[in-house]
Length: 189
Ligand code: PRP
Image 1 (cartoon, rainbow, N blue to C red):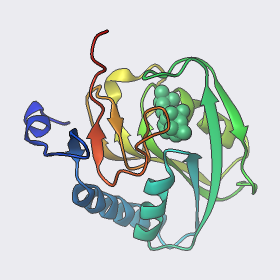
Image 2: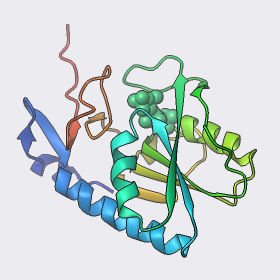
Image 3: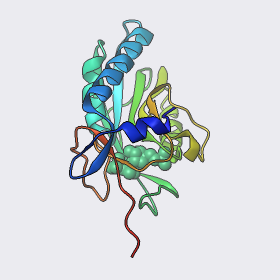
């Protein structure tokens, strides 16, 4: 779990944004996750399913950190009433291209927050009877959970902070920041 000290020690870059995890810290953790996933697969093939759009950079890096025969697929979801908070029902707006029956599936997410998205996707994917279904989430906010779901591989467990960069956005911006940064709270009117 992230300590308060870690946040205070974070450096300031990107037009005054506070960096929570640097690109090097992310790269090191992704390499460890890739090594663990490789070990767990024991030489078997893998289908990596990225959840658009936020997971795209993480999937690209994680895919190069796993040493297995891997293919990619992508889904996209939307949930109603999303601002800085996620809430409400999840809807599938882009389905898988290929069936996953009998395959080793790894769902790749940038962040596990309320768990609504991954609970919905897990249920959906299990209906197709994959051989295995695991979840990799770069960030996990366990304090926000509304649905009982855990990732099999977690990069960093964090408190309830609004994070941007490395795929994560605020109003679609900042996804291309190479570091994970904190979104400053909006000043009062
Ligand atoms: C984010 C994130 C997860 C989801 C997690 O996606 O990428 O998919 O929210 O939240 P939850 O656990 O509360 O369901 P978002 O819907 O913001 O779309 P994006 O990936 O396109 O930014």
